[in-house]
Length: 128
View 1: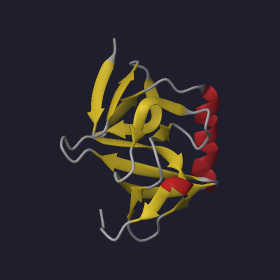
View 2: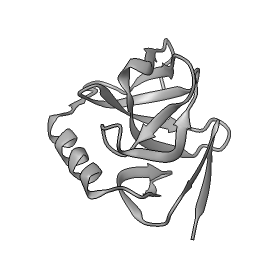
View 3: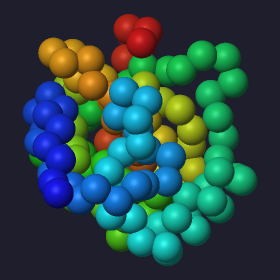
């Protein structure tokens, strides 16, 4: 069975198998995540740098879609899940060249968490 989740400028279509740590409104995020991506996520959890005081607000910069990832590695793509320039994200953790973020659709309130390339994030003056 397929699930469809509208996320602002995105439409996510994934299978019904559970993921590792991703969520939509507190529910497990249906995903196809490889064992390799799960292992990368476990390693990132050990060595990531959490935001100590409060989540930081960022906006997507650059051109084109910014792909969400299950783990901080390009091969761990969340197919069909992305944000676009100007979308607001909340920074959760940093690991290598990636940042764990949360995106909340301003129209539906649906939330998704995942990893993105840090170079595409720009600090926002607004707090989440």
